[in-house]
Amino acid sequence: MSKTTIPTGGITDGTIASGDLADDAVTAAKIADAVTLGKVLQTQSTSSTSRTTVSASTFTGCGLSDTITCATTSSKVLVIVSAEFDNDSNNASVTNTHAIFQLTRNHSGISETEIYQVREGHNRPENSGMDMIFIGNLAIIFLDSPSTTNELTYTLNVKNDPSTSGTQIPANNGESHKAMTLIEVGA
Image 1 (cartoon, helix red, strand yellow):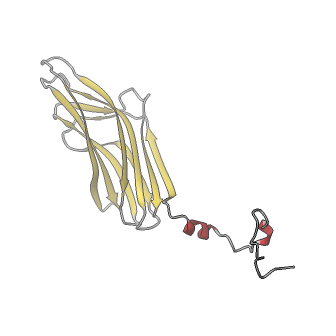
Image 2 (cartoon, rainbow, N blue to C red; image 1 turned 180 degrees about the vertical axis):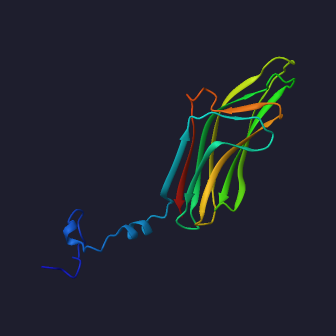
Image 3 (spheres, rainbow, N blue to C red; image 1 turned 45 degrees about the vertical axis):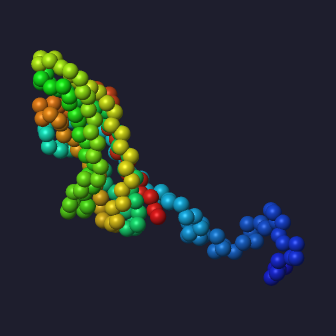
């Protein structure tokens, strides 16, 4: 027997069985619409233990990039990067060395845009002929708003300052690693 009205006292907890609900009463779309928080739509991840050596004062790829295509133009991309590195003064007569990291977004292979930059450095007195090496762990967490459904490629680049210094990623003969994770977050 079906009822068309709710009793005066209401419905007590636990009295409606799942069999009493119409098949289309609760759908994934209705649940998703009811939740107003961001939703993880997809993830992409890549990692490598290959060694990359950079001896340039212009941004050079360091062997870490990944691609994602967003479902909607309102999606955001959470970019997480981790990489061990070392920066070497190469026996130059300098008091500091820096590894400057750059995160770029390439839109469909058309245009590359810098979206984040960080400088990792070391400063200490040095004499000519003394080698100064600092080891660090790069960590980037950046929320990007690309506003497109075209393919996006995120790439980590590095350059040296001064140009006589050198950077290696990773620095431990393949025992350490570098990684990038891309997470599409829906609005």
